[in-house]
Amino acid sequence: MQARLERPGEDEFQPYYGKYLALVPPGDILGILRAQGQSLLELLRHIPESSAGFAYAPGKWSIKEVVGHLCDAERVFAYRALRFARADRTPLPGFDEQQWMAPAHYQARALAHIAAEFAAVRAATIALLDGLPEEAWVRRGEANGHGISVRALAAITAGHELHHRAVLHERYLPGIGLTLPA
Image (cartoon, rainbow, N blue to C red):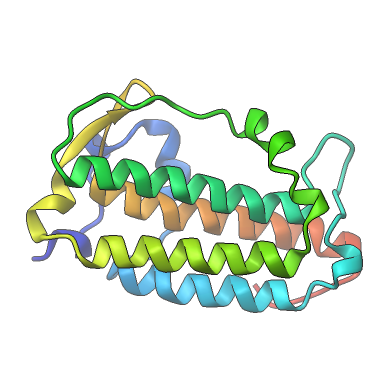
């Protein structure tokens, strides 16, 4: 069976990521990432720009910042996947998404622009993964002090988006008076 069609084993990722992987349905991860990207963009089209700066509580990110965080995190996951797929065993550092938020200035940007950035990032992620040879999917490296496989990084990318989409549906959309099917 193709490695990209198989779920990552528990030894292929840090336990923290299990919550994201549990959200990903079985199947071809590339198909899942393609469909998911289109679905998120459709959801974002329904959010008026006048509501995109909404945060459901003090100290929480706005809708714009959540989408920006998805862009940032996906870039990090894809970079890790690229390095490990190319058999680069150099340990990679973690990243602090909270520290990255303020300098990103997502609040100052239009949601449509951030959504277009997400579309470009997702297309680049899919192009990278789609071009990998079979053996690259099971290669591993170290990120943030833990071993992780390329296959796990692809699935984490999907699960991370699903996690934040659920938060958008549960905490953000009701706050702006928008009800959309999950």
